[in-house]
Length: 393
Image 1 (cartoon, rainbow, N blue to C red):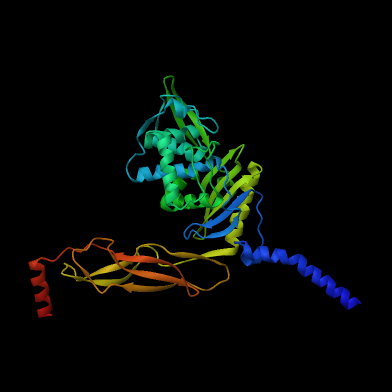
Image 2 (image 1 turned 180 degrees about the vertical axis):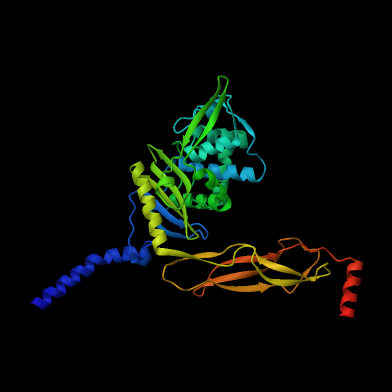
């Protein structure tokens, strides 16, 4: 009887544990067999260099994002700066519409003038709705036109469950995104424009209001408390509204690994920060990044037909990386293929081959190999000199 009871108890225990075992297998990001549950409606951890998701919880559930919307606004602002469509020192005249934004704001007044730099500072540090709309209008002529750009960029990035209706994140019908899509646009911002960290990690700063009444200093305090609370924080954006609850896209870098932790629909402001820190700690404790050759690394040469130089160096164009659990000693393997030759003239960055990376036998990415320098076409004198050099040598 005792043996039968023991067998029955053991069987019941296995049945009770079975659903949890299945759940752990189905849920991504249970590194080292550890469970992770986040006190929020949705959450994601992404590794920035590879874009790989290492944990997700309701990652594709459409939700109001509140001011985390401004990650896309910031991305388009920095893109406009990079393309010289606007400049840091440009002066923006605030419209009556921009000045009317409620919620988080810096209390801009109609016809007030601010530089692009100070408005960007106010958006990134203090989540200024009025500053975001003023910049949107300056870049595109109207907020509506800017929102159209936001949605086009979202589609280009593969954000399949996102629809923007404004540039600042105030609740609106049809304004939604997901934890996964927020991670995607956050990754694009921090990897393409890492200098956003300058403002995103500033705890306190000021701008000067310039109105008909004169000049008045206005203080900015970072809404992202992780700047003070979490070692390695690089950004990025908070948000809260009645519909969205409390949201955060948090970025941090440690040991050359940058993680993005997205929290949507936390019950209170403290919980969103606590859960983001838990997620970041989880990622750094359980995972590491293995990387291929850095962009610009020379991996060989290619001959140049009829060029002033007979060869040109070949370098890696893009970084390829992969996330793996700590404890693994497997490294990326790269297979290099370079074309037999290239004809002059050759421009810098001409594709002349590729490097294919595999991890544990599976391909995880590939990068073009490109020329490091330009090579002009050889003239008659160059060709004669080369023949004489060969002859006398």
